[in-house]
Length: 291
Image 1: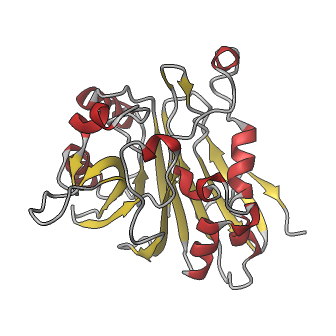
Image 2: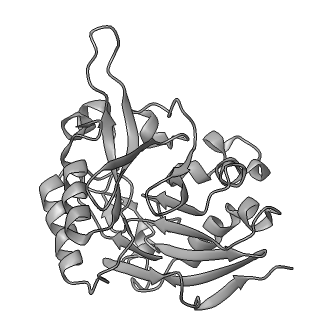
């Protein structure tokens, strides 16, 4: 399977500009003709760090009917691959019910069909300002030719509200129970570094502390006794900053097999680029053995 992560630095509220930037990066990338899946970050075109419902309202998109979905459909048809992109969702107004907002991703098939609309289950502080939790919980379903896919969004991999037990590992445990073949997490993951420190770091080097944490949160997948074939995990993060909030980039694709974790490739903490991995190839190195 050939998987691509488009990591870039969207600007808050600049939807058309952000789409042009994404298209520009794709046009500069030597994409394989048989690409299977392109994954974009959380709220990829709207930006993420909104401080009120009023601030984000102009950028809310009707369920699988807004500009992010249209971009995904056009891109899926052009590249002939699956596309997943994050967006701020608002439900279709219903006279008998209030309108509800979600932090969501939409996944499109290579022929432009909407396959899934996943709504974030565990909300970060910023999400709670304007969005509701998914009423359906975590998502693992068969998506096109990708197999059984567990979709997540950023905070989903953390303990619920940062108060649940660390070892509950809710998201990864749900993926194990649902027998996922591949896990994909679209992210707007914030850097642990202070803004004054961030500019002194190498933009082309991944944030190893962040990557280590992501791997730790996948431990149930590593430990699964039911795993009979390799499982692949995609972390599609954004980079750049919004005000004083800096994002950690470091988009990563890895393989979990027989209790070991292997890394294919990662992007830098502030690198705008499309990461492409062929999972049939040998990963670059092992980051955790089976012992």
